[in-house]
Amino acid sequence: MFVDVAKIFVKAGDGGNGRISFRREKYVPNGGPDGGDGGDGGDVIFVADEELRTLMDFRYRRKHVAESGEQGGSNNCFGKSAEDLYIKVPVGTILRDSETGLAVGDLKAPGDTIRAARGGKGGKGNAQFATPTRQAPRFAHPGEKGEERWVELELKLIADVGLVGFPNVGKSTFLSIVTSAKPKIANYHFTTLVPNLGVVDLGNGRSFVIADIPGLIEGAHSGVGLGHDFLRHVERTKVIIHILDVSGSEGRDPYEDFIKINEELKLYNERLSKKPQIVACNKMDIPAAQESFEGIKEKLEQQGYEVFSISAATKQGIEPLMNKVYNMLDQLKDVEEPVEEISELLYHKNTDEKPYNIRKENGIYIVEGRLVEQLLESVNLDDNDSIKYFQKVLRKRGIVDELRQMGVQDGDTVKMYDLEFEYFD
Image (tube, rainbow, N blue to C red; front, side, top):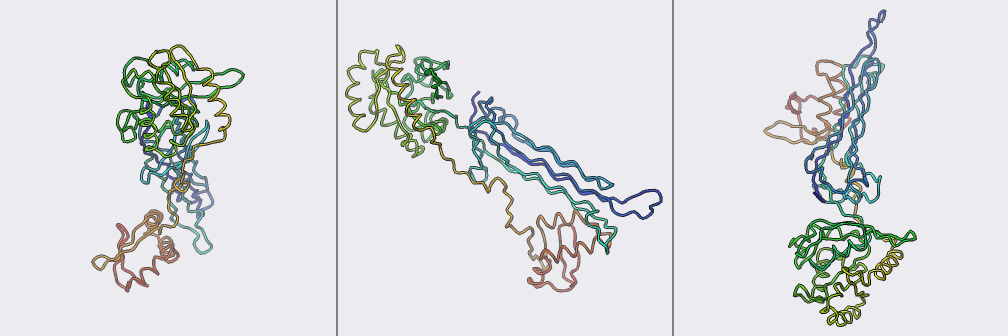
């Protein structure tokens, strides 16, 4: 099954907690603190793998979590940091932040990587908090939480040339002739249900990749037919071969088909309508095609298009068309399809965001936020040194000053999650 879009949840590993520990050795009755730091959590990293072709695996596994760092040990032993989690995706995959829809990276070449979520830092052990006046700290820092987010994966096939045209104009037959690809071929609409890739080998080291895009019809840009699902695969191509059925075997006007398909490309993405385009008038082995070819060729050449007469069934005109395409690609080899990447989303923690907030409800001052959670986890409120450290952090991080600005008075109640206490300056 060909799957080119997926939405998954990724979470980096949490940092390991710092250890609370004291030396307990023979002849050392009052050993100092020796709790080690926790290890860092693993990152979540996407990597482009040229052996993968679809995003099908993500249909069945939508949650990906990296390992957490180990807790710090005694005797000043640090916890082991976790291994990063590498998630393999096909080359040509774009990652988007699900919340904003903005691109966070484009995996265009084998081995390209994107770090989508950072692991949490390990917490400090109690040995880190020892001072001349606080020689036996009975508290340590917990590890930071790893980042987590929903990401959308969008696969755009990496091909030099894209084949476009109405259904049943002969795109699959053309692909089977110029490459070793074996697409499904039959005389009915929408034979091709998924994009097909093939390599054109012209000899002497000259080659390029071509993609047969499922048949487009009028309204494809808005979801009619199969076009809405596969137009994205034309975006990567550098040259478009527009195949027309000049025999009129489907009862349509080939020139009108050309106008309609180009309009669909333009409505889907303005850049698509500006890509270099070669017109291949197909089915020239049918007598009716000879009658309409010259008129269509004249109209299109007046608009600046180069027109070739071909027959995919008999291979007529194929070689000069392929040589022309190769020469165009050679001139466009440095052109890349731009993707607007927002690098700030890679590390989506907002460093400017205040780590706490204070509000007043029913006369009670409520203090909440990431800083408060970490502080409460790290202190031992039954220990005098730990309480002093708690008070010091409240002053140093501006919480006390903000409470004063909000009008807190001695004896007022302050609540931090499950902890309630009376405020005294």
